[in-house]
Image (cartoon, rainbow, N blue to C red; front, side, top):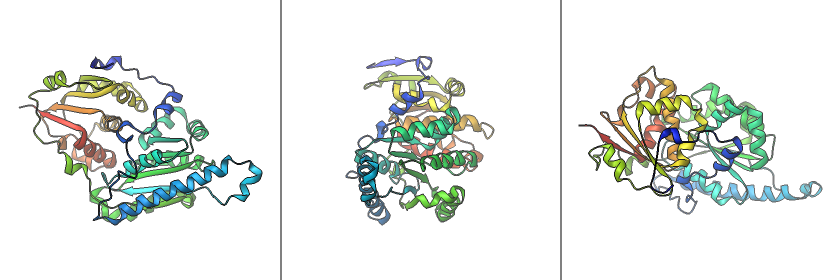
Length: 349
């Protein structure tokens, strides 16, 4: 598909659950992430400490895996208990996902990488027990990025999934975001997690990573673009292994409403670059569309897809203040943080 141009209606949004599981290995953006190329910021000692703790966790998991491979009669002779699940907390951009991918790259067994949003969408579509059974049958290590507490329904889906996994030999490592504006409330966030997860908290260890969002220091979406218009950028873009697609913002939203969100990652598997024309802000009443778009950006980010956007607005104005500060502020904030890294913005004059 080298240098191919696609229409959005050409994307196949109908993979089986089994195919999805095969695709959900380490995301393309994080395939090269290791503990060796995670460089802790010397100003924040917790980054180095957590890195070392996770490396030790992998050793314990490897030992437990060896124990599992022994005949049941001999397992009692091996002092290698199942490691505790891990809850990894920190603000956007301190390297939590890098560390999550490093676990998968270091572990010699089978691991699965899912965003929390993707997990909840899959559970809603396929049902909890079926998803848990199929995942734990195949994977020892389940990595869940961005566990969210702001929506009680989604949080309970995630917690019930953990409960099912805890009945097996599989282990979970999950990350979670503390908003930069809520650093003082971090302990409250963790207490909320502990309260909602109930008795399951005994199976978790909590690691906290302090730091600053590195994305904000490497790129700003407000920087001037090299292109006069998005059509020129589209024609100039050279694809790598996949394809490129240009679509009007309203047409994109219409497609997102039509397709179940857990299938959005098919765009990431098909594209090197997505060009979105004529973007405009989401109003406070467009919560569903805003969440669909935010999930799309998550999947494009994991897929390392280049994003080009044109419109009359800076991306800081993309979401109504009620959305940025409301119930789903974690999702919206993460979307803007990731756009700040991946997006080239072309503002109409």
